[in-house]
Image 1 (cartoon, rainbow, N blue to C red):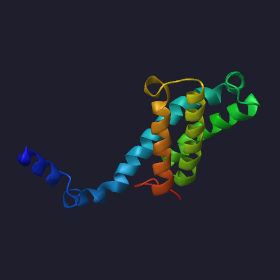
Image 2: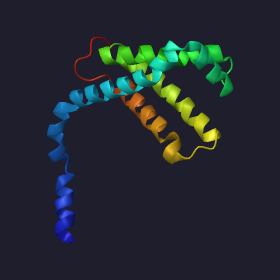
Image 3: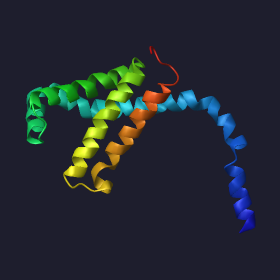
Image 4: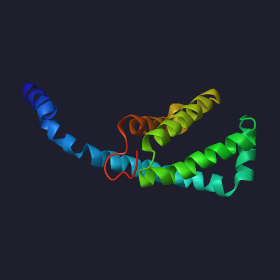
Length: 143
C-alpha cells in the first residue's frame, strides 16, 4: 500500500505537471472550439426558426418569448461563430455562462435531476467561466 501511495504522490507532483502548462493555450483552444461546436449545433435550429423558438420560450415561462427566444438564438449561434474565430472570447464566455446558469436554475425548478437533467448545462456553465476568465488560448483573432 505504501508503494502505491508513493507512486500516486509522485504522479500528482507539481513538478511533474508543470511542463504541461506550456500547452495551456492549446488546451483552451480545444475547449473554445468544442464549446463553439456545441452552441452552434444547438443555436442554429433556434436561429433559423425564430418564430417557433419564441413560442417555445413562451411555453417555458420566459416572457416575452419573442425577446428571450431571439436573444438566446443570437447568443448561441453568433456567439459560437465568434468563439470559433477567437473574437470576444471572454465576453462571449461570460454571456454563455450566464445563459447556462439560468438554464440550470430553470431545470432545477422544473424538478430535473442532476444526471439526465442539468449536468450538461453545468458543464457548459463551467466551460464558459473558464473561457471568460482565461481567454481563448492559442490562435485567437481578437480580445
